Length: 273
Image (cartoon, rainbow, N blue to C red):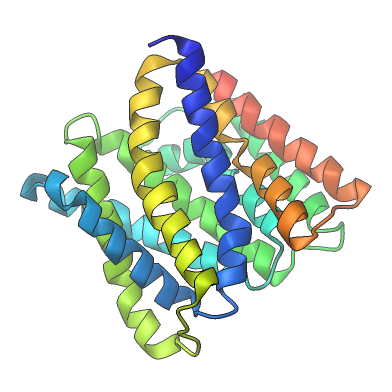
């Protein structure tokens, strides 16, 4: 496969991921966050059943717990911040992953990586409106940290284990760990067109198909391409949020977006060296 086709495939993944933010935000008017995640991931696990093996269960559940925290913070946070902010702040997991890898596995952390983290959080501060982090943005930062733990652990285990089986158990873990919080926090549980569309986009497209597409396409392009293209998730989240939710940013917030984007690209380029 030519590199350009692989890059276009990854661009499709970023577009799908970006579309999930306004879609889920609309669905949350009718279904509580943990209830949504329980249904989303347990149903999606059924698609992974043909690929799972017992050998990846333990690692998948451990990685899945970090994923569960990421999606929990993200879905709840969408109730308190804009879909645009959620998309851009979530994308900073690319910047935070080297820091987490250092904390977990003592992988070397360069000055450039530290500078990128500082740049990203400066951008998030501007994105929040230059008035301090609101509650939703704080939850999104925690979401990005959790996803950074997920990526660091996947990089650690995926070399030795079957990636599709690992992904399947990870999806199961997210749904499983969401069940108990759903039982005690659910106040909305209405299945209408908004919720069904959100489940289809996030489950079938953003989780199952996008995961397969990402794994396949990344094998045919450079990691720098993948990092930069997938970071466009935040850009697409803003495009969809502006089109469907009417969300717009101030000049200060766009400056924050630029800093976050530069930080993510810098890390992606650095990781390819």
